[in-house]
Image (cartoon, rainbow, N blue to C red):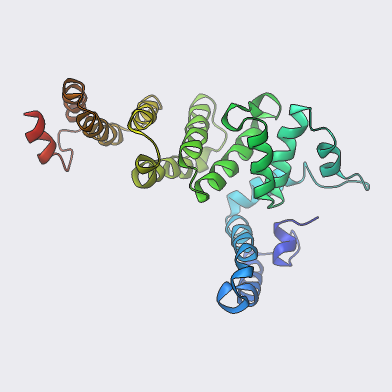
Length: 258
């Protein structure tokens, strides 16, 4: 069955040099500028495979997770899972299986059919598999501009990572993914009330004071736009307590007389 190594045409013990060389050779052949727009999907999968296998930590985690789901002795694990559509455990495992095999659309369709954010996959997967699966799922949702769903999954992972570390050295990458999502995309994708709820979630996760101050500034600005002046003033004062040097607040200070 297709996997990251077969996509690149290399063995699973390939060196970093081999991985880079294989990616460049394949990319030259299937790049949309050469092969046309029909090759864009193949190029995206190739790039995903390269990004994972060229990073030692991510490669290790991928290898560990993939070995749990490969065919063995002629047994078709995917078919077995598909034949149990009413079993939530089988469907949770199928979501993860499809993600590991770069069948993102199929994985998302299964996940949504089971309720999306309301599908408690953590109840049906081992903790490590659930966290790996959720991380990949969140990344795919963000690529498809499903920013609120991606935010919810990223935030849930960080909360769990705070409780009991698993990603460890990857936790910074996870946190940065969430921060960038909030900074660049989330606000325009949700209504004001939902945006405020998301910012409140961030404040519960235990980020540094300067991060919290920026999010509280955004909360104050949003509350002002909603006509909730008293709430905006209270939040803004708390933001300044966390970071007295908080930037980009001149206009907000004037509006609130703070």
